[in-house]
Length: 120
Image (cartoon, rainbow, N blue to C red; front, top):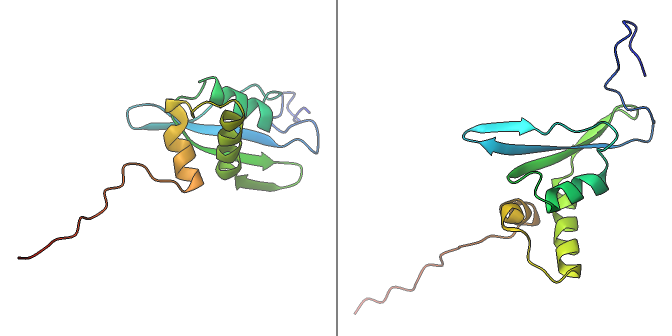
């Protein structure tokens, strides 16, 4: 799709095309939206990119469909899919995805429970 000025549009070509983008932390105190090929923004490719380490500190995944006019946070479904695939492969979540998966699955790590105090 071209704009009226002859430059390519960022709107996907297909009306049913959902676009997934990853916000990640590439360095100190920066959050960026990952650059991606417009044809490679589907759910499957984003999950594979996460599993292979393309994004080592993902913060969230957002999905949108310009033609349908909606946008939403897809982090929970991506985290569940990452867990499901790792479970099927009988492997642990990669260390660089552990915080992301724990955050969106509602799991907590390193929780210190209070010890009972006895007064004598």
